[in-house]
Image (cartoon, rainbow, N blue to C red; front, side):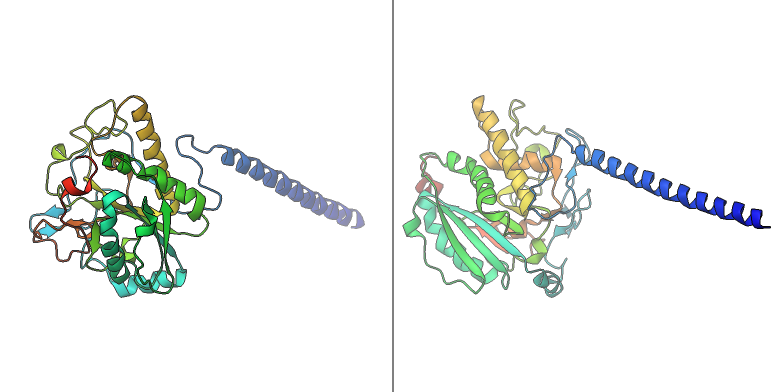
Length: 348
C-alpha cells in the first residue's frame, strides 16, 4: 500500500512539472509570435505617430476598381449611406442634442484652418464671426489663420475655450500656387503644433460663411463634402484631373463623387496622412512640369477615390451663394460667397 502511494505522488508531481513546462513554452511562443507580427507593418501605409490616438483603420480599396457610380439623390429623395456604408449627413438624419451629449464629455479639441492670402483677407471677418455663431458651438475650437497680412487679421470676440492663432505665410503672384501649398502648410502645422493637443481638424475656405449648425454630426475618421456643383452629374463630367501622367489622374469611368477642396477634415492623424500624400504627389508632378487641373482639390479627390471617407457631408456643408436651393437642400450650413475672381485673384 505504501509503494502505491509513493507511485501516485510521483505521477502527480510529474503531471505538475509537465504543466509548468507547457505553460512556459507556450508563453514564450506567444511572445515570439507577437514580436514577429509587430515587425510586419504594411509598407504602403506609414505607422501612425506615437502620440496619435489609436482608431479604426482606413477603408483602402484596390486602385482602378470599377463599379456603378453612387449618388446622394434618388428621384425626389436623398441617399443617406454610400456603397461602402459611410453615412451621408443631411438635415433630419441626426439628433444634435444626442450627439453633443455624447461628444461633450470626451473633452475634444477641434482645429480649423483657413487661408487669407492677398485680397482674400477681405472675407476673413465674415468667416470668423459666423463661425462663432455656428461652428462647433460649445466646444473647444482653435482657428488657425494663414495669411501674408497678419496685422490685418480682425479682432473678433471669441467664446471661452475658443482661440484664434495667426501663422504668417508668403504672398504669391499666382492663386494656383497658394492653393497648391495648402496641403504642405496643413501638414507642417499638424506636425509642429497640433499632434499632441488636437483630436479633429477641418480645413475650410475663407471666402465662405456659416449660416447654420456645423457640429458633432460632422465628426468622423475621414470626412469629405460633396461639391454642390456636380452632385447630380455623371462621373464623366466631374472636373477630375484627366491626364494619366498626373498622380491626381482619375479615369472617366472611375470616381464616386466630386468632393470640395474648400471643406474636408477628420481625425488629426488621418488628415495628416491625406495632406502628406497629396503634397508628395503634387511635388512629384511638379518635377515633371505637371500641375493638376484644380491643384490640391484634384489631389484630394484622387486620394479619396482610393481611401474612402468614413463620413460624407451633403452639399448643405458647402453650398454656393449664387445657386438657388435645390428641393433636397433643406438648410444651408456653410456656403461660398458671391465674388468677382478678377478682383481678388492675382492672376485669372
